[in-house]
Length: 86
Image (cartoon, rainbow, N blue to C red; front, top):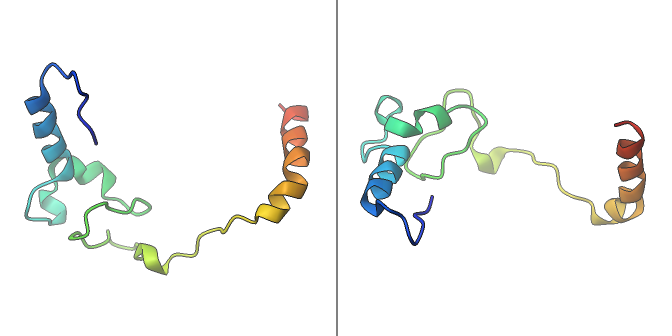
């Protein structure tokens, strides 16, 4: 989150950012504005929060690794497919 250089109310923006990140006592009931983002599938930017119920830590997740060679060979085919089926 950022505050614009010419913000009319920079202190109000600072308060909103503090509210969005939650309190200094990180429990699921005490996260203030961060509550809508504290769900499985969203990983917290705060290192002091435990993962929501049912979520693996991000270091245990299997993510898709991009294959640059496949993309080089097939990108035009994929683009053409999407253009034909719009």
